[in-house]
Length: 339
Image 1 (tube, rainbow, N blue to C red):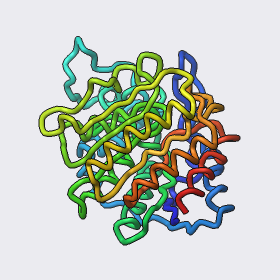
Image 2: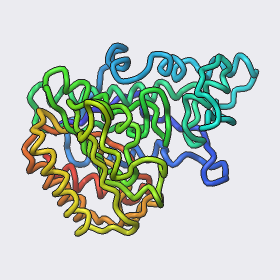
Image 3: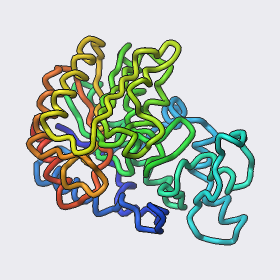
Image 4: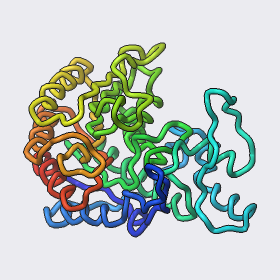
């Protein structure tokens, strides 16, 4: 198995964010990437440096003005404020305000940044551009004939919408991989096994029938992102029936999870995609500090075995997983099954 990564991801340290009422260092640390990379290196996987993603590919997934904001928003903010502080919203469009774009950097922050744990700094663009490049390159490797490839993406992407960053995510790496796959295949499936619902991925493909999106995640009644990820969200228009949410209760363990995974994989088999994109969150592990599931390393190994058994060329896109002592062992269990 080949592993795609971009050098621009390394060393990036996200600015602190407001998390549960406190200003804290981001859970998405550079040490997290190094822990994952160590598994790849020690396992003898072929590491490929991803070429820079094209602007046209980014614009096939994301709004042009949103991309402009991600790239140049911090500079606009620093010029206006005279401060070098990261750009973070202090007001959001709400159900009582029209979601109208205005030119002030703080207004743009409220419009394009969906929470207070996803600040935008001057060095953010290079890191997220590299993360998206890794996702695109991994998909290209599979299009070229590899049965599977792993994109070591950091920052993650599945909470990123067409025009909104959220949940440590800025560009939707899984959606970008699917866009690459769609250049060859009529149908592509995405299965998201992160403990949190892939709300950005759902939004991007919600009205489309060419990309099947399935997410297994903690019930939004008790977990982020709270407002979306319910079972009755099935897609709309042409996409009706092509979005499947499987919310699971707190403390879900291996047995329950695997039963629901089988149901999801049967849907994928029926859809008959040309490529399968896996949003590989490792935060469903029993020891993850942000997760509320109880999956074990053996559980992750079996998840990978069952996904591989679908028999579809597969791209693994790294999503969550924030407890550094355990994410390596979870990744090792997954990659060892695919190699």
